Amino acid sequence: MLLRNLGLLINATMTYTPPLLLAALGSCFSERSGVINIGIEGMMTIGAFVGAAAALTCGNPWIAFLVGGLAGALFGLLHAIACVSFQADQTISGTAINFLAPGLAVFLCKAIYDGSSDTPAVDISMKLPKVFDGIFPVGSFWDNVLSNYSVAYLSLLLVAVIWFAFYRTKFGMRLRAVGESPEACDTLGINVYRLRYTCVIISGFLSGLGGAYITLATVSQFRPIVIVGQGFMAIAAVIFGKFKPHGALLACLLFGFCNGVKVLATSSNTVSPNLISMIPYIVTILALVLFVGTARVPAANGKPFQKAK
Image (tube, rainbow, N blue to C red; front, side):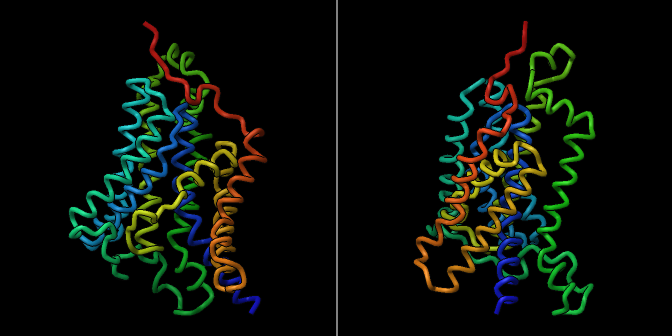
């Protein structure tokens, strides 16, 4: 019984962590470049819808996954235009995206699928495939460990790639510098506008991937409440992780673990499901209360930049 519960807990953790992690990594790009992006929730939602719709249309889960990311990138571009080019209030722009993107997703869903706000279920053949499927004997230890969580491992690999890009490349050095002192970067010839545009669009792309992952690997269907606050949890994970990719990974694993506990507790039927569903959000609030003061926010975060004439 203990081993069974442990297996369920690991399975739920590895299932719920990747979408949070992808969105959190996207938030790291935006925040470290000096642009607040609280529109992560909306970008995940539009990515979830477009990913499901693309899978139902073309039947290729990897293409649908990427198209979902592109949908999020489009809203990242809108956020960049508003905040970088027109110097709009970044919080208000992100809030507008959180209304606009889900509203557009539901509108398109009803227009395409005969008035239904839910897409048809994504068939098993159109879900994200197991990268290691067929290499190991079915039911063996390595088949369960590697095949079942192959996409999750790819998201973990992305953490290493982004960490290297942040701390071992010229692009990462400039990204972090722009988030601290864009004026100084401008005097050195760094194009602050272009760098911030790039980072915000990447933020939207990764958030869209996180939303598409949910509809293509876990829920298998778009519904208006499919994201249910996971975008805000991803932002909390970035703050908890002190705006660092590896810190965000640890925070997302914690939140994914809390979702696993929720699934395990729900199956026991000993506590009210309404109380159990609060676990991840309570942990998110506690993490913000306890650690938000210790996180060093980039000095120029949220401050519009205007090129000196």
